[in-house]
Length: 289
Ligand code: NAP
Image (cartoon, rainbow, N blue to C red; front, side):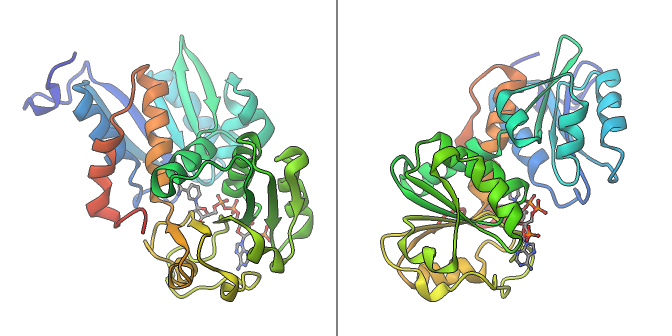
């Protein structure tokens, strides 16, 4: 059904297509808001909801999604690795990362992809007009989000992708995802980086938290500094970077753009990115500053 089905008192109906985000915790998630804003703007009889799925239940939940005929799933913490193992088919990028954050049902098959890195690059471009090609980049963190960003920066042709992380072996493994451009960083490398991405969980839910390896005194004008955290909308790291004259962006843009990529995979149509931005900006604060 197309047109404006979502304005009808009979909506959602037995014919509505269903997608979902699954994770734990998930009740804070902006993903249903983003997906539903897109479906509304597209005039699609689709609905997005959230499922709180405990750790260890990801594979069972995906089997359920297949049985129920969900059109797609966004997968978040702690299920990205389980989703990678469980899906029937996976993209080359998902295979490199060993993680899946976007599942599409195609002819009864669960098809997995990783859209976090592409979402980050789109957000970087929108907020700062930056293409990482030929740039010196530094990524803080080596977890799932950092790995997706490191691979995306490497694939985009960054001159260098240095990875700064508390755990050295994890930093080395993450840096390898950027190919020859990847290397392990030392804290002083921050000064020479043109693009800095804070991709660790430091700062999540705490606007005062500082990463012990990041010397915020090294931030300077001309740098682009991104923090993948979007709650709070301005972390202590972003505040310091903005204070030093750097261009800053928080993680909201990455969330919006990976959701747009999910909508495109599920529906086969271009996502209404501006409508999606408009839906979350009042809820979560500005995505760039
Ligand atoms: P993860 O896989 O658990 O990785 C966590 C990373 O943070 C690791 O590198 C870990 O270092 C580091 N870390 C944690 N506590 C630390 C501390 N006290 N000091 C120094 N390093 C610390 O988590 P993730 O899934 O990558 O998520 C990371 C962040 O990205 C979270 O804040 C998440 O909300 C955000 N995120 C945002 C988006 C978006 O769309 N904006 C998408 C995905 C994730 P070690 O390796 O040394 O343990």
